[in-house]
Image (cartoon, rainbow, N blue to C red; front, side, top):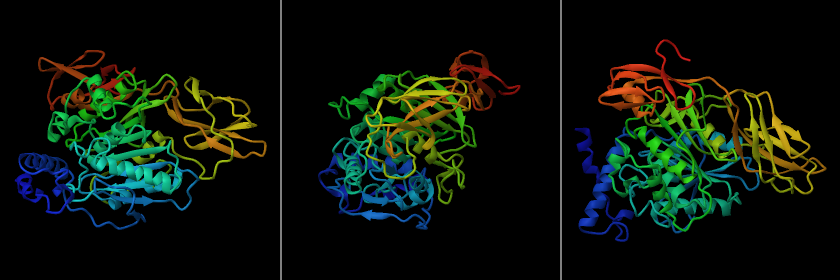
Length: 507
């Protein structure tokens, strides 16, 4: 069998980082560590198997050799846009198994977004000396805890980017695919003081492997209560009392490598940390493939957690090649899947975007909040800035208005749509100061969401329940027939969380 034939390549080479006594002790424990590495290499590495395409080096990357003690023995690369504003944001990107920093840069679309939105892109890279399948070791205690191994190396990369490029330490973000997605969850949990937000693509909840194998965590997944998942994150940095990072969760609804169940468990973990319900505040469809976009809002209108279910794709990074404003990426390498430009929406979730020009001397306004919304309008307010003549208002990174006071109502919007807002003060000369933090707000209304799938997949996606071998739509409790992969129904969701059988047509 192919799986078994690959087992023999999983012996770690002498002299590698894992050969050092500090992280690869001899004897029985060493055997257990190597077996764990083998399992992860098989389930993640084989999932991303096949020859890695030769990097075409379309994206110029700069190797950084001295960014810290680097206990995880990782490589650091930087993509610096030609035009970068003063004190730019930083996005740290973590590739998937069998991939490299170059492959991830060339296909993910992140460099295009860095050019457009003015942020510094840092790409961490692991090697076969760390893991035979070039996976980040998200499952090893020596690498997935604060101030240890690979986690500390990635944190040092972020710190180096802030100091060496004079980046904004308040706007440091992290994202990654698969093992890189699982490692993204590690970074959010272990370093909430460093990363203000992250996007997990086809990843897993933090510290699932505390009492489970990597294989079990990936598929069929592990079911814990939201409180239990949240406690695992709190244990990563017990003395932390500040705000928790915001989290975006992306996955393909046909993923059999990291089952979609993990998206629900990740949602449970991060909504619980933010003290939010596991029922989305609002839901809509985005992108050319009608990706389902669920948002979980705090009391001030901030999207603390979002979940994006991409229909019809398996395990990989969703991309949408092209030159449109919502397009990016390439399908030129395995596991970059043509569907929706996830990097665009992730950058939007991070609150990135702007003109790329240096801000003036006025400080950023504080207290930006959503005051109301209708089907076509969103109201905003913020605190006054001394010396301000008026205020620039930005929607989705683009300036849309100038407000004479500390409030503004945006009009002419689409129903059932979310928008990211920021404001900046202007002085008497019209010079614009630093931008505020971003809040996301949504208009009311919008079309109902519809889903066509087997009863088995409806249950796995949380749209239905099963009892006594039969399937029932959540909310309406309509009988959908036997719980198997052969019976297919269309479900209409309206309102959020309430499903009805709509085989005759939807919406």
